[in-house]
Amino acid sequence: MAKKILGLDICHDGVCAALISSSLKGERLEDHAYIPLKEAPRSPKELEKAIIQALDKMDITGAVCVTSLPARGISFRRLTVPFKDPKKIRQILPFELEPLLPYPIDEVVTECASVNARKGAPAGNSVLALAVPVSDLRSHIDGVGGAHVEPDTITVSGFPTALSLIESSGASGAWLMADMSEHATTLFIIVDGAVRDVRTVDAGTKSPKRLALETLRTLTAYLDIQRRQIAIERLFLTGSGAADNGIDRVLEKALKVPVQRVQMIRDSGVPVSRPLSDSMPAEPYNDALSMALMESRRSSGPNLRQGPFTKKTPWAEYRKNILFSSALAAAVLLMAFTSLILLTYRLEKQVHIQAAQIQRIFQETFPESRNIVYPAEQMAYFKSKLKDRRKNSFQGGGTGRELRAIDLLLEISRRIPSSLDVELSRLVMSMDSLLISGQTDTFNTVDTIKSRLDEVKAFRSGTITSANVQKSGNRISFKLKVQL
Image 1: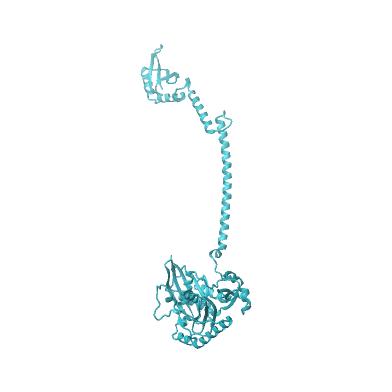
Image 2: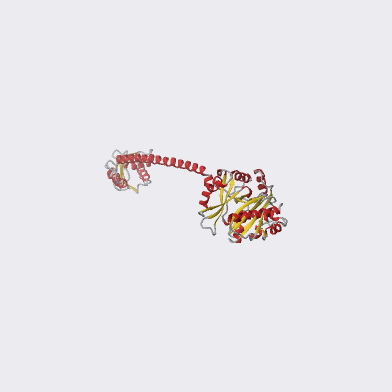
């Protein structure tokens, strides 16, 4: 997925925005806008309104934002330090700059603009340091924040274009770059691939002769301090004033060096989704596009989001909420763990109670077992003994089919209707048969009893072994043998 990067240049006389998309295929300029503004001083509300107007038709959702401060309100100082690590240099900058600034060091934010080894010097590295008042930086952040823009990086207007020219032109030679507007110009002196000095002069396209004079003064002062001769090879023009026709010829004649306009949209070779119209100059977009390209290519440059203005990471921004949520989650987990322990204790207690009841019932059921060692095996043993006892619990030794005498009597009483005149006098059970003796009124009743008993499922067959008239002549004695 393409990464969106917004370059928002807050220059001397306007607001310029360039939105690029960066992917594996390269960068592409998706949209751009330039809103003219009156030159400083201007209020945060004016800046906010201009930014909103510039970004009105741009989709900057999820875009990384790089903004710039005008160079006019920034102090630049040249230092010499014994090391080259930017982190170490940033640590000592407040101490080195304090005697060189006209205001207290705690009222400014310091940054290292460029670091390069001093050629020809016995030791040390040349550092261009800058300091911006805290009030200006806060006003800038408030102005862009009011337009719902949160800058990830804040640099100095003109620096991105200068660094892009250094990258494309190489690290040798000496040249100037002028970031121009109508009434002010920021001059960059670049020597051996590093920005050596920066100065803003109150002269622009409205006073080209004065601008040429201030440029010569700036260059002469730099050469006097460096105490060596440097031949300036070229002057690059950028900014909204660079589009003024004729300014390049005036400066070329006065300074006696070739003058070249910078058009980063054309020179960078980045494809453009919405080309500029013929009437729209390309020079004002140099810084905004250079900022976006530097962020895409991770090129180093000055970043004023230092100290108290460092952009908070997602962790730092939501640290309190995350810690509170973590503490709350830990408390909930602790309560859940405590509840689990208590529940386990109660369940174990119930298990011990149930085990005691089971042992008591087991011993009551099987008194012979004093100790329960292997409950399943002991229960199987006593069950088999119980079965043996049940086989012998029938009258006459039982039936082999484990039929109880009481069950057979119940079945016989159910089968013989109460309307029959019958009296049973004897019931003899053996392993496979049942012998029934009794008396009744007629032979037909004997046959009826026999047929009724044949209906019992537990009886296989029934036979009348005898049926005789008693001596009294009133009753019939009978005997039935039933096979079980």
